[in-house]
Length: 107
Length: 358
Image (cartoon, rainbow over all chains, first blue to last red; front, side):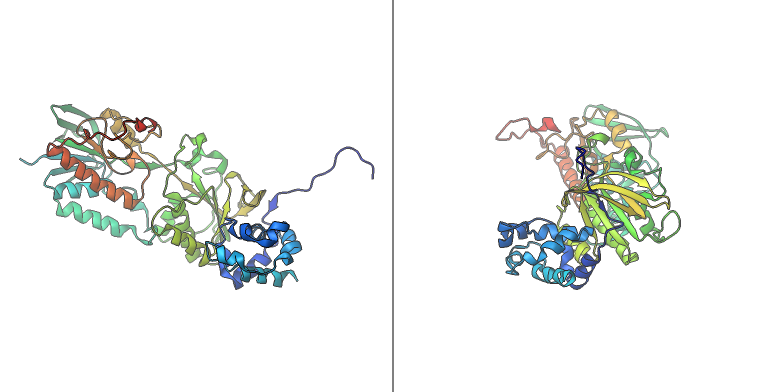
């Protein structure tokens, strides 16, 4: 391909009306504590997987809520289900339950 | 002879302080510019965080007025006031004059005029309403419908409209809007369980007792959604719905979303009456245009004019709970003053002039 010195950037905007929010709706229905996440990031701070990869439950819960599913589907399997995030969550989110439900939808 | 106190403004602060001043043995005259007592509370159906009826509180306040035999003057339009030898004379438009040994100013707030935040389209787009209008729908038992007459499927709620905003000149937090948004979100979901509700906030200021519990209930029980980011603009789609644009600051991406109804959480401003009475009595205003109290921590009911005191939201945004507490504090301060106790001669350990900021 000829390099013209410029390229077209992909639209980064979250198009809420068009995005597919079915994964979030499924998780919300079966694990209502999913709603309680306030994106504080305590889960990510304690996460062992987070130390070595980009895995961030805070980010994935938020992305699912917005219907930005691709990154979550590609990364959710990095969780080792150790449950440390559940011990530290200040809002009482059943984080392990949330991850299980996400995995169910991502298989 | 009983000493006399005039209270200016018959909202929550004016009513509760009048009742307490009467109970302390003073002859109290309560001047109200409209035709009835109760102020903004009359326009509110249920109150946060307990969802009790606003009219219950009005009843409580009215009983205090009746039991104290407070002299209530409605439709009172004050034209001038003069002070002579610690005595005040207040003149009304209808040529009546009231005398007093102390004046309590409880002139309260006005709601922010959402038209001034023009990028949100209030007064331009049919499906943009204010939190006060939504409350009116609840109060009158109306259906929540769009301008086209349909039940909205998705409702957006915008926090901080006319608060924490240099552009509107209101840099302060109005305190009550965040929890009102949470309350009204729940009330929307009670009526329209299938509707989605999205709150756009900068940060959730759940400072009061039980506020956090209500916030949690909104999320866990009712599935209300909260998106951190301040709306940059709203525009109208061809079908009359409203397209909002916001930076989702937690996702780190711009976001656009159509909503069938957009509710603006309008903030609190010093009322027109606060400005008028302040000028009339030569009272000092702070940088936020509310009355400046003699000290922010210790003399919160004391003005710059001897014998004139403050209570309620004329000194800054307050919840109903805080307004009632402040009203009673003002009654107590006035009782101190009228009994001959010096109220502002106590020296603090540090004489740093903190008050300059306000």
